[in-house]
Image 1 (spheres, rainbow, N blue to C red):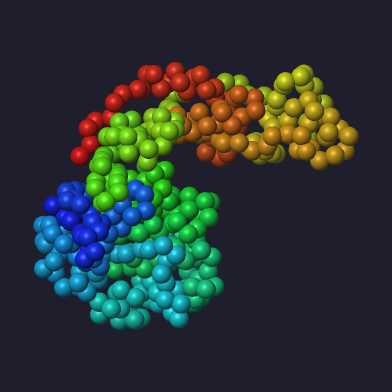
Image 2: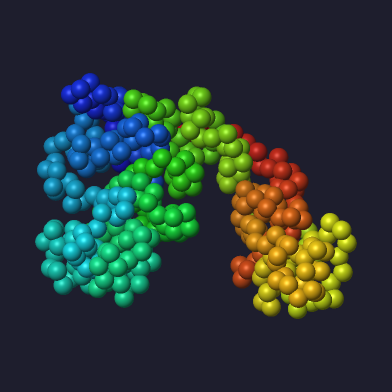
Length: 370
C-alpha cells in the first residue's frame, strides 16, 4: 500500500503544488490521478519514488517512510513510465528493457534473455529487440517503456501520462494492454492523466485534484460519474457523465431484434422503399456498411456502391455494456445497432429503448468509495 499522510509540497516562491494530501493506494490496484494542468497530480506521484520530496507530511510504501530509504535503491524497486517513453536512443530495444535488472547487478546476458520475454508480454515482436528507439513507431516505443518498467518485476508502477503523445487508435490499444497486464500481474499502479475518460476506463479508484493541489474526490469510477463531490469535480468529469456511466452496467440478457442484412452480391435483386436501410455483409457474415434505396440505384448504375451510404458505425457484443449497446443503436442510420458474435458475424440488432429499459432494472447508486 502507498499512503500519503498530511502531505504538502510548497516551493520557495510560495507556490503550493500539493496541499495536505491524505490518500491510500491499496496494494494491487490501479489508481488514477486526474485533474487540470498544475493541480499537483504529477508532483504527488513523484513523491512516491522521491523524485520530489514533500515539504511536510509522510509518504509510506508498505508502512515504510520513503524519506528514510536511499533514493537510488527506492527507484530501482519501482517501475516508472513517462510520456514519449523516455528511452535511451543509443541503446537497442533489448538493452533499454534490460536497463534496471543490469543496474541491480544481473548479468547482461541474463537480463537480455529475460527482456525478450517481457517484450512478448507487452505485445512486442521479439524481432524488434535489435532495433533502436528511433526505428520504432510511437506506440511501439511506449510498449518498450512499459516493458522496461516491468523488467525487474517491481511491485509498484508509476505512469506519468504515458499515452498522451500517441494517436487515439494507438492510445486505445495501449489502454487495453495495461488492463490486460494488470489483470495478470496485479501491480500497485499510480497512473497520472488529464483525460477523465482514460481515468474512468482504467482505474479501480480515481483521485480528482483541483487547483492548488487540493484533493477534491477519491472514489470508484462509477460513483465519480454518478455522484461528483462538487461543481469542480462535475466540471472535470463532464456534462455527458450519465452516458459514460452506462459502461458500468452490463448488457447480458438484452434482447436482440431481427436485422435485415444481405451480402453485397445480392444487391441487384434488393428492393427498398423510401427510408429503408439494409446492412451489407461480407461473405463471412461480418457487417460491412449500410445501404438505402438511393445507394442501391448508385450500385446499379455502375458507380461506387458506398457513394451514398453510411458505412461503419459501432458494433455491439451481447456480453458488452449498456454504453456499447446504446452507442451501436445511436450510430446506426436504421435505429438498430449491429450486434455481432465473437467471430464478428451479424446476429441481430439492438434498440435504444431496450437499453434504457435495461438501465431501469439495473439502476442503483454505487457504494460509497474510499
